[in-house]
Length: 192
Ligand code: GLN
Image: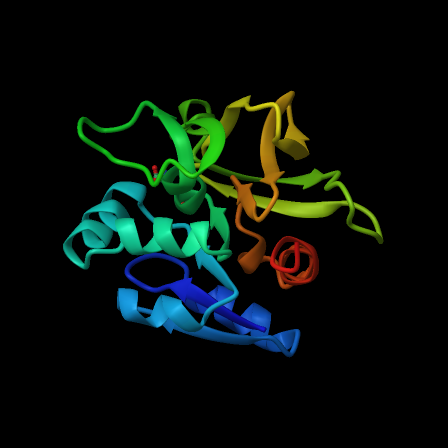
């Protein structure tokens, strides 16, 4: 098992540390050619507009789409969830997503009330109680296609979801020290 973390901008180091703590090999991905050896890819949180610009200039869009078609599992956290969504609401003009997962996300959705907060979430399939969600100018998932399973909600809005080998979390599991969502991705989403 080898998981890559897109390392153009944002919270990528924390994901690598988390996978390594589980004994999973994890690598910072800076060039599209590195995608070939991966079973899973994480697109981290950060600023989706900045990550999108860098993805465009490094030529990541088509290679990520092609590798996903060939079996690469993908997990987007926060900005990453925005980037894998089929549709982005409150996008900046021209902001392009990968359009892989059948969800509609709204950028900075909670941020209209408050920029950052933490909340205990009931995360489907995780044992040992609730999961502490760290939300930083987070999106929410406003619409889910028929094949998309909601995994967690906050205040009635879906904040984590899965569609086969795709997963989106609006919050930052890499910032909590709790590896259960990383283990879920490695054991269930990548292996699916
Ligand atoms: N608000 C950011 C965006 O639109 C996402 C924030 C985050 O990833 N923590 O890209």
